[in-house]
Image (cartoon, rainbow, N blue to C red):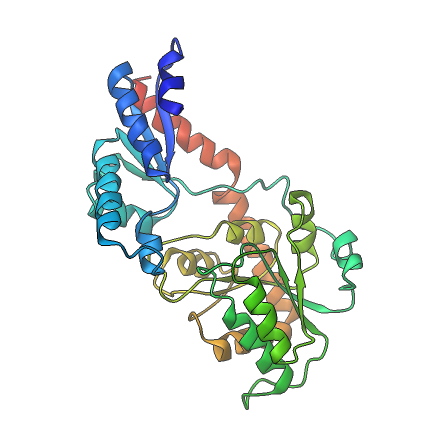
Length: 324
């Protein structure tokens, strides 16, 4: 559809597509050849490597086809944009030109998502006003590895490690969203008798800022097997809202670099509930640190992840492509 639609457009200066899906990038290439216009491809996900890492793509023939399409796009685009330095290293290692590959971070609307009042419609509906809220909002799938959150909640409730500090009944884990793993996570929480874990259905986009405002700490988690560089979009929203973040994901990726570089949160290894529980209690017991980390995240989001700063980068890339 994109290819034939592009043939009908009378005049344009350049072609901008995103990938995946891989066929869209290939359609963009052939359209650029037929119309003799430069092609800019925005790489949003390192497909198929991410699903290979998770064990969701195992068929050798399909892997070969996907890898071939991926490298075709990397090698033939006039310019590529990726959203992290780790992504740049990956695409260059897989055929992209170093000189035409640029890191342009995904942006967050810092006017829409910003610090706000903790007491709001969301916190009132779920009776969170007097709780210490640890939240996760997003897809509950294979990649997220949310089992670590359930286990950490169990540790905090039942004192299953010796150094977790005082009993903290008021802590509540609020998991917002849906996904293929949600039912399993709910069953785990029930089997452990966890009354400190609250599952909330997916909320309208307009409510998302309220979820962040109602939170004391926000979580970003990924499976340990997902070693492909990735920066979850929710991280940028958490930073923009001025909330401290704790990440539980591979420590060698781009996300810890952003968190530690901006000093907006704490990073723990993936699938390590004891480390996660200790990090949570560290922030629980230090209001000043939570506030400092939140301020740092907001400042970083305004400086480097705002829509205007990222759009300006795209404008410069496109100007170079068309020769302006």
